[in-house]
Length: 275
Image (cartoon, rainbow, N blue to C red):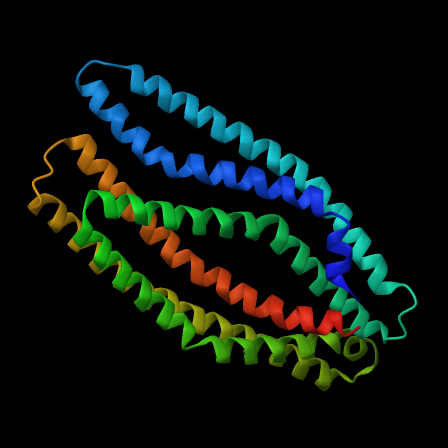
């Protein structure tokens, strides 16, 4: 099954989705800055910046809402097209077909729900890093160091994640056959194996996520201390800087979770492409 060939037939529609995602991400980057302006304006009894913030918020909701309404219908159509291609004239056993149909659904759900978030997080991360650099170079250097540590934490566990996902998918491909023809003890063994792999993946994710947050908490504390030491006294400016720091932390902690999902889908893609 050639997934790339199917996706090429929807190039224009995918490009439109990407454009809307980029617009949404750009407006999201501007939001903390507009909040800072609005706070300073309100303190000085000038509400112009508040109107600008309200306009930006409404535009963000409209663009995001329109994209989601369009995408829910488009990706349903794409899933039907790919699943039909997967099922037609394919001699593979029903158990394996059923498992890969479920895996195919994971791919389309990732494209619909997580790729937009991934793009927004990535663009937001780059934009926020640039803004932090323009505001305080020392905080930027600490942000860079913290980000590298988080990437190392997840990079070191990538091999284990791939191994667990491969084992989990192997079990899924035999599930229908096991449920329909195997004795009771084999059914219990099958469920136990699936549960064990899920626990292993969950434990690994918990360790990685916890270590990443510890790194980022220290970075947040340093950012607050450095901001005050730098002599930033305007509440709005200080608030905007700390919000950007926190957004950086959220994006940096979230990106490796997308990486974990990508490792799983990479393994799935190899299986489906070999169909």
